Length: 375
Ligand SMILES: NC(=O)c1ccc[n+]([C@@H]2O[C@H](COP(=O)([O-])OP(=O)(O)OC[C@H]3O[C@@H](n4cnc5c(N)ncnc54)[C@H](OP(=O)(O)O)[C@@H]3O)[C@@H](O)[C@H]2O)c1
Image (cartoon, rainbow, N blue to C red; front, side):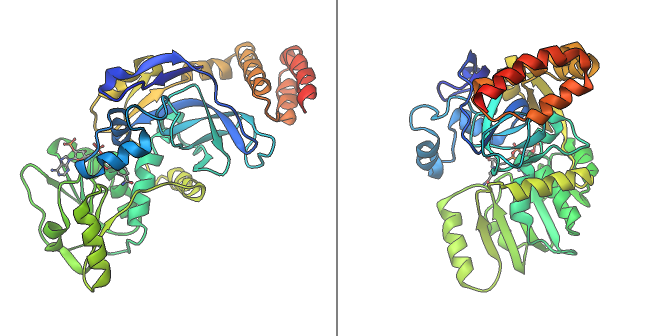
């Protein structure tokens, strides 16, 4: 399969397109044909191993000391299930899904556990839009879970990958949201629901806040403390020795708290995100889309909105919907893939395709015979 490989750490042009083996499927795994995967700040960090000083050693121990432990990077996806392991019960071939993975989404196929952070695609979103959800939504949800109606939330870095979701979730939870961002992104951030916007180049927040979410890593707990209510929370996404000490100290005494965490999504959270997206509460903002062949450009792009890498072309999908013959040929490819992976095949689905399109029965029949060998 085609994949973007990161052989060494470095700038965007270290990314290379290569043919790599398709991932093997374990019995609780689903094989996903990846349609879209975003490039976000965390992906830049994984590609360049550019960690803040304190976390550099820990970061490299986790992702690979000298070179990336996983050559195929990419951590968020949306796509279609094309094969399922023998013990899979939640998903069937043909389901459209989105979610996150440790690595491997910059490739045509991805194998992930059915129990992992994944859910069915929101009905109102494209693959690209759904792929843009998990990164910011999971993180914002993790940090803002205890935000209560009427509280005042200050978001530092509101126009970024996490900030855009923090603003939307803050409003959804009934908070009054003040967004700090560049003047160029005022309209974008207001459009997401922010009550007040402040240009970080010219304005300094004042007043009192129940929660300060420092997404951009531009403040510190000691500086933020003067703006916090007595039960206020300062939340940062950046790990430092100072914040670990502040977390410990503030947890032992009354008054405002400092918080750092690494947000990992799970299945329930993805389902909640899908529900919020379908209700229009969470809205991804897509800035640009690049084909897989131009992934280095996607990594070099700096946009106010998600940058999406389209891995399996939507053109192919449109052709599939529009033309039975192209669709059936594609279906045949998928079935061959399932067989090659030794996965359980959803026989009902094959029957449904054949029944709906009599002209493809011939194509499905040989596959059905092969299926019986491995069943
Ligand atoms: N701990 C975790 O679980 C976790 C999860 C996700 C991300 N992260 C980390 O969190 C960080 C932010 O992620 P992100 O995806 O939101 O980054 P991002 O998309 O680059 O957004 C950062 C935003 O901050 C704005 N900004 C720059 N200077 C600012 C200032 N002085 N005051 C206020 N805003 C300012 C930028 O606006 P302009 O572009 O307009 O200047 C940009 O929109 C990254 O380091 C990422 O690795 C951690």
